[in-house]
Image 1 (cartoon, rainbow, N blue to C red):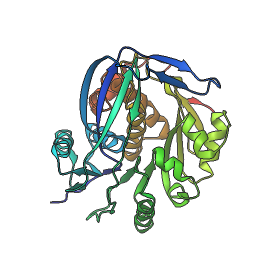
Image 2: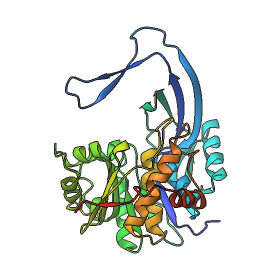
Image 3: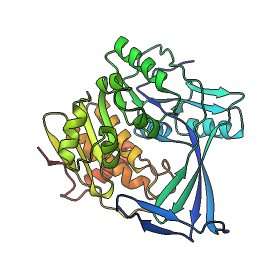
Image 4: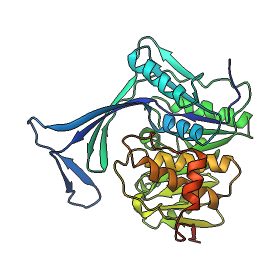
Length: 330
C-alpha cells in the first residue's frame, strides 16, 4: 500500500564497487584547472581492497539522508531483476526508504559503477542504463521533490516533473544537477530552473552551468538566481559553502574534521540542508546542518554509512566551535 511521504528523491540508483589503489600518483594538468589520476598503462596494477556498496547514487543518498533525519522518505529509481537489484532494494528498506516507486526491470541490469579510490579522493567509472522514466501518481503530494543525477536519455522526463509541479505548486523542488543534466544546458531545462525552490552545485559545476570563467562566488550566486531558483547553494569542498536567498548571502565553513574518503560529501550537504528547509528551518540554520552530515560521511567508505540521525547531528551542532556559523557575504 502506498504511504504518505514527505521527501521524494529522483535519481539513478547504482552499486559502487570501491577499488582502493596504492600504486598511483596525482598529477596537475598543464593549465592547473584539474588534477589527473595516473597509473601505469598496459601494466598489472595492484590494489589494496574492493568493497561493494549497494543502493547509492545522488538520489538514493539523499533519500537515505532524509530518512535518517526522521522524515518519511521515498525514492524514484530503477533496478534490474537480478541479485544486485534485490540487494539494492533490501538496502533501501533497511534504511527506512519507501521503495514503492523503485521499478524492477526484467531485461535491463542494475547500474554498476567502479570507484577508483586513491588517498581521500575517488574517480568513478560510470554507466547509466536507459531505464524508461515514468512519473508516478502520488495519492498525496510530497512536501519536497529532490531531483538529481539521471541518465542522458531522460530530458523528456524532466518536462513531466515540471508538469507535476505546475499542477501541485505546494510541492517544493530541489535541484542538484548531475553530469548529464548539466550537459543538457540551461535552455533545455529552463522550466526546471524556473520551478526550483533550492538549487545545489559545486563551484566548478556552477561555471559549467553558466558557461562562464567567473570565479567570484557572489556573482555566480546571482547569475544562477536569474535562472529561477529561490535559494542557491554553491559548495567549494574544504573551503566551505555559499548560499543566497536572493536578498542576502552567507558563507558557511566546514565542520572541523579529517577525511577518510570523500564520496557523498556533497550529497550529504545538499540533502541535509534541503530537509532542514522542508522542516521550516531558516536558510541560515539549515546551513549549519549540512556540513555536519558531510563531516560524518567522509569518516567512512561510501556515501551513506556516516549519515546521521537528527539527534546525533544536533549534538554535533551543540558542540561546534564558535567559528562554526554562517557569515554574511552580501
